[in-house]
Picture 1: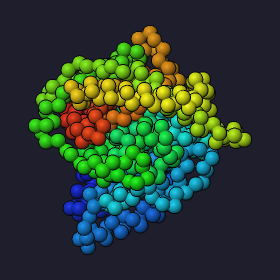
Picture 2 (picture 1 turned 90 degrees about the vertical axis):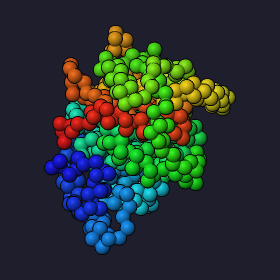
Picture 3 (picture 1 turned 60 degrees about the vertical axis):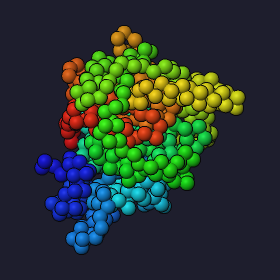
Picture 4 (picture 1 turned 30 degrees about the vertical axis):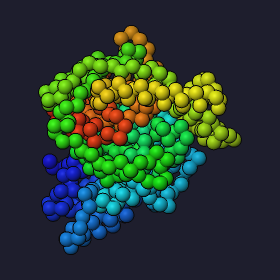
Length: 475
């Protein structure tokens, strides 16, 4: 491949160790691509090119002097601008934090640096991450490398666009209702939403606490599942700053264990229809996993609708309660996207102490019932969203004669935030015709809590069967 920036992160690291490419050469290739593409994609909001070059030179010296090298030595990565990276902006897309520069690295960023990765910069988000489209008053909107009139998703939309276009080898996003998985699906890349606590959310803004600690996580994004695995291995592990942290050892399944997994799949939830292309993609993914030797059966778990309703209480209603006071006296600083979110939040029944406690208990009861169903099907396969990437500003869609509203389109990811399941998205196909022609389609692979290794192993098998990754046209 002539374009170094589209090598996998794992390949980049291997070729650096073997002195086939230099960290300096690789950093310069990425910086040049950022210079060329970022004006039209608007994925990065802060890049420190001089620091990148300095770190790349240091990485080159380490190679030539035969010092011990980390698994990501010299690999250029990016970080969502809601995670602390010392010396770079951590504004989460809001004027309330305009100009805020982190003074320390979040623990996962420190782990990536210790593994040898070079942080290129931080990427765009919607204001306070409360949207599935990336736009804000600080930096404006991020465009999809597949179609500039469409969004790469949100809230990790800048991260998805940067990785898909080859401006970054991989990176880290966050996810409270699909914010890693929807952008991965929209942008034709891979993403992992881990179990809360498996990857530390310490150093993220807004902070992950209270009910948000149950649903909000940080996780890796990359162009290949192998790269997801490499990033996950580096950043996973407990940290005292994460209230959900647990010392869970790595447990990669052997081939026999993997093939004994039963996989249940469903094309829709019976409430929110999906587009024909997405329905076909789920069927194709199920057949691909059968071809790979898995036992795959139709199965739609019970409790999905209750999970959707409860997720809205935690994310939409509680989110509005927390955010609204922040803008008292500064209403003019609200971005249109966040203002719309707060209007939707205000239309929800007001949460009281009693109703929040009731929702919390109902969530725990539902989670136990859901996990009991997954004893028979420890892996679920389903859509990542009801639609492929949408045009900027769209808020509803007609599918099979039914209007699908904004929040409902992402219910396919929201359930698993509420329930705490790890879930990955892998590209499996592209839209074949119509106004969405050429857009990527990913499917979602869901596992039981703390079993990310099984999820990633199945995702790798699916990726190997489908081989659906492509270079976007605006790259």
